[in-house]
Image (cartoon, rainbow, N blue to C red; front, top):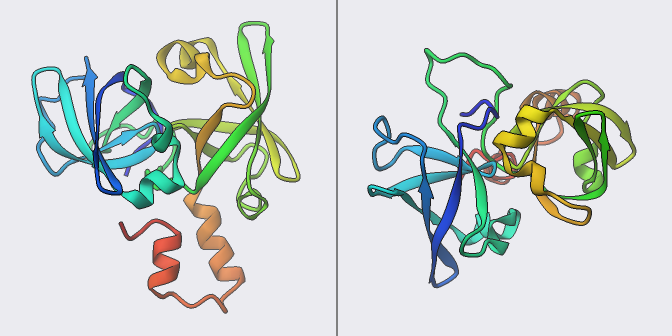
Length: 211
């Protein structure tokens, strides 16, 4: 579980193919003294398991499923990524409850700089749009944001200067893909409204409870 408050940015040091999976080596200045092998770190919104730690950063395996559902498949050596360690029960919940289970990839169709902020317009799959509501929470590349307004399968968010400076969102351009995780509350409400959806292995996998 995460909050969507980015702790640091990292840099992709090495990408090693392992069949359909990938071994990702990340350099970061983020402190890892409280991280051990087996812990979770959100990498641009995708929850990954730490499989190695070194003096420059950490190593994580990325499954074929994660590659297929996220922008991690397009990572290149030298790319910057957003990082957040898993939420601890004694931590402040500054953003919103984020699972780190990406629902899909959205695309930026508009970027507007207004005053000191950046306004992004994003387009997502129609199936995900039902979980996006005005003034609701959404996660973009691991960053917890508030939805300004919605138009069918499009929505808008505002990026303040601090968020732009401390995350990779400042470098995003029109047509760039981003990882999208909608608010988990909407998914539970949808299940209550549509009780015909049986809770089975497929449903658990769809909502990110199975890796």
